[in-house]
Image (cartoon, rainbow, N blue to C red; front, side, top):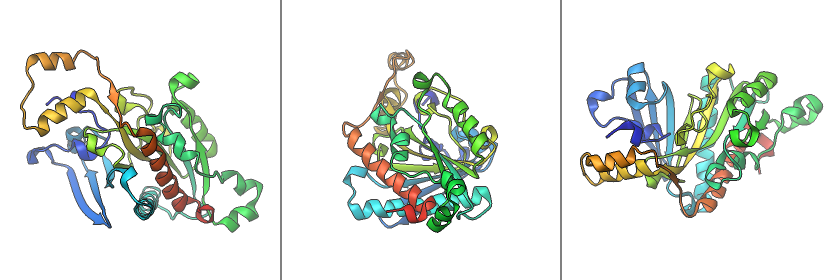
Amino acid sequence: MERRFLQSDLAKECIPEAAEQRKGIAQERRKSGPFLIDTVKILSEEGAKAVGKPMGHYLTIECGRIDFLGAEEREMLARILCGELCGFAERVCGRRVDSTFSVFLVGLGNASLTADAIGPGTLCRLNATAHLREQDPGLFHALGCCAVSMLAPGVLGQSGMEAGKIVRAVAKNCKPDLVIAIDALAARDLERLAATVQLSDTGIIPGSGVGNHREGLTEETLGVPVLALGVPTVVATSTLIWHTLAKAGIGEPDERLQTALRSGNDFFVSLKECDVVTEQMTKILSRALSLAFLGDLTD
């Protein structure tokens, strides 16, 4: 099936089925409590071309629908994600995450659109601490947290500026050790909506999941390592059709259906419980980020 109709931000969903097409791709699976953790490493340009993603590490936690998890499972998920965030941060930065470490959190997306509010919604639940390091050093060191700065740049239609340009200007000024971009993602399979968390070290292109390619947030564009943390909340209708046909074992659709899918009349759908799952997921992501970088400020 044509790649253009199989849009997904999840590297796990984009691995070719044919073994001969998996050169330069390593995949590992493990369980942590009730959750499945899938690590995809794209090790070569050949592998990157096959997956359609940049070279790097992609970690996916399959947690099941977030609104079906109990309080203990949500806390377990946050703590697992905290450990992975610290591990990724220390590996890409080559140093420990401690009180001398600074991180710039970027909440991408439109806070007024529920399915796109993962980024801004997560930041709303966190505390910035970077200002304390200069204004109240005693308090800052007593807290034992990292220097955390945050920004929700909005979308092009709200600010009239590309989010990437805004983030690049701020990052140049605050000079963090690490940037973490939090965003809503697009998936290929409905079962992964609000049921998967992806963490990668390749940065992110805002809007790429819905076809609005903007300036990327990467180490090349920002000058510091960039982690991308995201949750799939939408699926494209054309992707949903093609993926459903494939799961049903149906071959290539006839020319009429292909023509209709190529017409450009595509739109994105989300869960009817989108407001509930977005709220729950922002709580988990903010909890994980707080545990990882905010120390004693964590509840």
